[in-house]
Image (cartoon, rainbow, N blue to C red; front, side):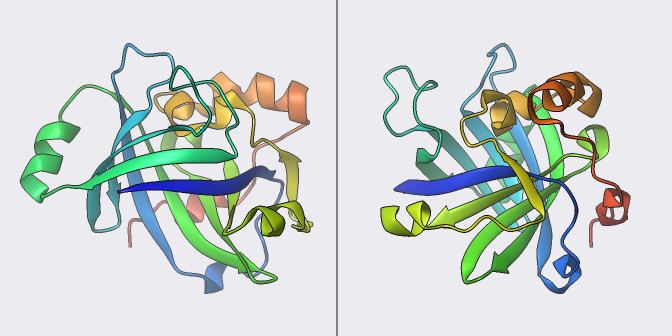
Length: 188
């Protein structure tokens, strides 16, 4: 399936007080090839859903550069056997808990990164039209707009630790790790 995704991404400064009332799931990503600085192919376990996706900016000429707020996604569902075979490829991996968050009628994927990226929390607000995107009111729990920040892309984060990105996020966005994320580590 191919679709155009409109989204704005923000660093989350503090966990929303009502976060626990929203459903969540664990997502595990494996970006390939490992040798690429910014791989755009990912093998994903999204709760019980297994898939492989190629995702890149819609107006990209090289598959990497372009307006990151509009992405083209090619997604193929996988069987367990296909997933296991593809996920055994040595790639760049990470794990996060994704909340299906909503505020003022706008849906968001609020990602609490786990393990080596613990402390990083990002909210991706998704829009069904250009006008909805342009008229979006930013909630108070988010900080810097990182929609165009290359380092925040999954393929760039994969395989890194929070220490690897801390300096850039602190100097560019005055971002500090979010406290209290460790409670989201468990897989249920």
